[in-house]
Length: 119
Image (cartoon, rainbow, N blue to C red; front, side, top):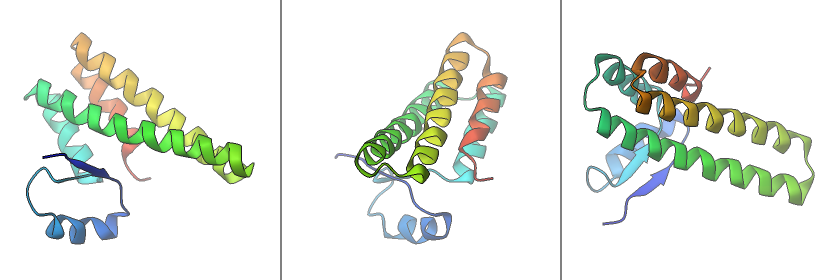
């Protein structure tokens, strides 16, 4: 079964979770999910699964960055450049988090995930 990956506003996340047909069908980036990932990393639990989850998040953010950059080129809209810059920063920091985790610096990797949370 192919997994669907989406990002939604937090207020829609619960409704989408209920409508998903089975566990694993839907991947939603939420503050709670990021916090859970950070806690598991800090405790050193299931690092392989944490890295897999982080790679999914990174894939989503890279796709959003690509879409924002394409929109910038088509619309020449200043707001889209701001959005692209934000996604670029998130992708860069998430890539750094992956590297830190692979080096065994789990606390630093967990700290770098803070960028994914809503501010």
